Length: 460
Ligand code: NGQ
Ligand code: ZN
Image (tube, rainbow, N blue to C red):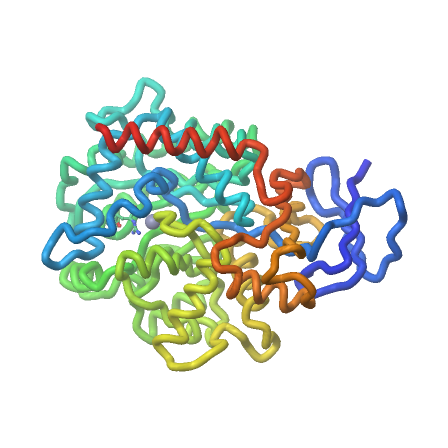
């Protein structure tokens, strides 16, 4: 038995199609997608245009409870680094139950906004005193449970963290909860692999950054991962801050992206998160490697990172996707808008993300981010095509900003003009309707749980 839905308008990889019959398997994968059909009375109709669900390629779930709480001056010159001090202080006390509550609330928010899968760049592994939990995967299990309960598609990326800076400097006390030997990380991955498989989550790995993983740790853990799964996704924070680039130059004589490309087998399974600071050669070489650029425009703006040269990357046909990272915004439309606006502001132009074959900016952004996000996730979540998962959203045609418009204009208005009042009516993941009339079934309890966990943390 397959499942059927009729959509008057659907955004396929080839563009908008009319009168589309969407058919998926009981396992939640697209079986057939055929345009130009006549609807029959027994087939349910989507109440609006159908658009692919968005993969979120970078998340630190716990940081959702800190969003909005660091917008005050704590230093004469606040920066990414002073924010990180506050973030570490917050992370220091978090319990597994609190992580689960925050992630559950966050995943409900993500689904309601149209994110249908997430890559968790997960580094908060140990107890507050830095000792491993009796169950070393305790914190990872909290994330797996949150994803399962909410229906969120998950790529779990346990983070390897070993040093506080280039050249092997010892971790600071605030980093105690993150640390693993390479062997201990391999044991964690082995423990997690069957658990991920059981809920069709994908397991990958994230060397935190070149600051946090020395060359031998990087080499060994990649060999270990390959022995487990030679196609597993690998994500890394790479060149977010100028101070990081300078420290890497002082240590190795090379910039971080150049160093990585010369010392690691970077290819299409890699996601380079915050490849913000690259020179012309790094743009060319990184794009040619096939790696996905992991862009987190609202977090990068919030932390004062700098502006990625999106049009240079596009000129090199680089793959890219978006992540909500610190969750200062949890909405694909906001991150796509921020990405386009950062380019407009720095270049003094408009419609930068449009390209020769796609003049519609919102559509170019949406489809680019879905394709690159799916690649980074290592899961078949690349849109409305047979073999991919039936992850999709239905736009809200009754939203005043969208009502009465063509599907192209609806998507553009959703991305650029919906003013945070989400224009998402339904969200389906793996062929299941998780969000109806804009609300996830767990909305009330999940949001209450998130708020309660944050209140506890603020008291602590
Ligand atoms: C993180 N966040 O791991 O949460 C980092 C900050 C670091 C971002 N890079 C810590 N946005 O990079 O050292
Ligand atoms: Zn990050």
